[in-house]
Image (cartoon, rainbow, N blue to C red; front, side, top):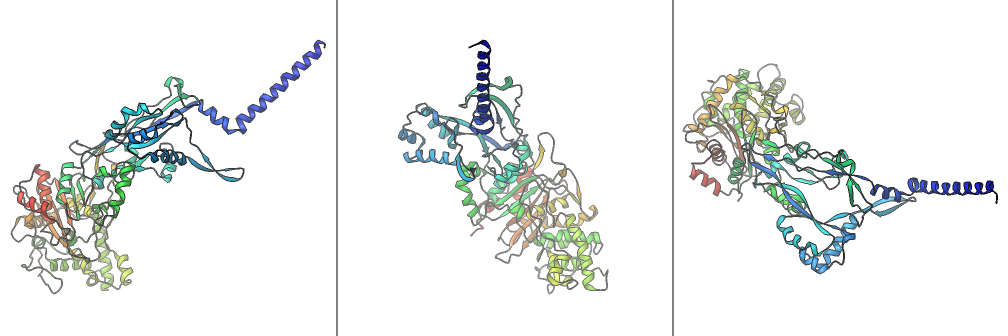
Length: 619
């Protein structure tokens, strides 16, 4: 064969091999997904590093929400050699049959439905050379009995991670809990979250999720086909460090919170305490309550959530935020303030105690606002609120009532009533302040007057408020006309609270009108004949007001709001005890114990404290 012919054969063979190579390469890269996956496995991988959640402290810098180390028992199937099922089951404290069941359960979890050749097909993404969790959320005590003998069971190892920990068994309704992310939440923020991550589900954990979760880090590595780390990618120059979420500083006093929960044992109701000058929540007790440690991790949530949810006393229901109660006689305070601002009364205006108009206790006539508040005279406020609603601005008594009620509603809203508080927690209700539209729906337009709606004058009927709003009313009176939206977090890291909690909210009532009302509240507690003598504290001047809220389903509710000291208010408080009767009997002494505890750090009223702690009002 001549040289030219040989050259032609060589070129033809070379070209044929090249064509085969190109076709095969095209098949591997474009058509066959298996090779794409294999190539990805022997390539750059991005590992997301999730930081621990931010720590939460109380106002005295006590750590009240922390992180605790837990363990997962991991395995890599292809590394498991001659597993002694009986010995391994005994080590981890399960029956032999559980081992086989657990392996099958893990593999089945990775089943996914896909379409192949036009048909739905189940494909399993389980990979025997990758790690999976055999047991999850083991405590230090649990893993300590397993870890020393793991060397006898090749392919198994321990992995650490963190969960929430609550050093104090209080505030379950405040802090909330973490739970596994839902599909919808995952789709809303896929850049940060992965399937199986935990997110704040309720409480502060939910409201401040974006802060508490921190900033995740990224680590790039080169891996082999078997998932083995070969080397850092680009010597780690592209890696970013995970940053823990900023600490949250609360206005909450955890000792006061715990004391409140003790006082409310065997009772239904709530306590809300605020710092008047800032709006910071000092304590928020929902009774009955629960230890937040009962809702840490999937295992405990599965064990405890159903029991808490099905409990007839509703410990998961945040009464201070969501329970809408008739305010009863504490509502007379805001009625008096509106009347003074509107000029329909002066502080020396008196009215007879006409029991034929509305029922009342036996007491002398109230000859001033101070007297009316002290003795809580129902007819006094009937007369006074009638003047607010029916001011003679229209010849029609019905149209006149609508004009008066519309103005009255504006006053109520300026006190934060009938509107949803902007507190930094979920589950908050606005209460009910009935307005013109409300009564038009009930009775028809211009078919009602004050005589139809007179129960609102003494905080009954259609009026509803939440205990948080009650405490805020006490703070407003302590401040003589202004307030800051109630909130828990006083600072996110070093940046202070959210901007909306820095804005002063002013009512429509001038500060000068608060003095006679405050004097009446002082007499309620300090003077003979006052309705809250059990709220008196030696050495501390307390301003307060009792309420007995009618309850159509049973015994009346006991209500009390107060603030102290009168001259320099540092705490404003509302106490609501369901089915406990007169406000001065139970709510008032509970409030006084909380005030004494907060202002002095101790309680000297031992007999009063013993009576409250031993009382069982659930019977």
